[in-house]
Image (cartoon, rainbow, N blue to C red):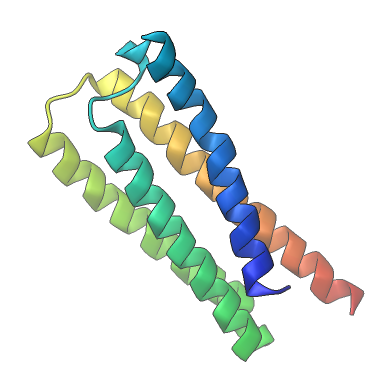
Length: 128
C-alpha cells in the first residue's frame, strides 16, 4: 500500500471526525466538549498520523517487521496519550465525565482507523 494513499484516507477520516464537534459548537451545545477539546483532538490526531507513517515506512523497509512495528507504535501511542491525560487533567479543570467522553471519542476512533489500516495491509499482503 502506498504511504500517500493511506495518509489521504486518514486526512479524510479526520475531516469526517471533526463534523460532530463542529456541529456541537455551531449549535451552542458545547457542554459536551471540554474547553480545550481541539488541543486534545490535534494532539491525538498528530500522534496517530506519526504512528501510521512509522508503521508504513517500516512495512516498506521490511515486511516481516510490520506486525511488531504496529504493536510497538500502538503501545508507545497509548503511553504517550496516558501521560498527556495526566498533565492535561492536572493543568486544566474540566468535568471528568465530559473529558472521558471526548477522550474516548477521539482516541478510539483514531485507533479504529489504525486497525482498519492494519487489516487492509494484511489483506493486501495475503493476496500477493
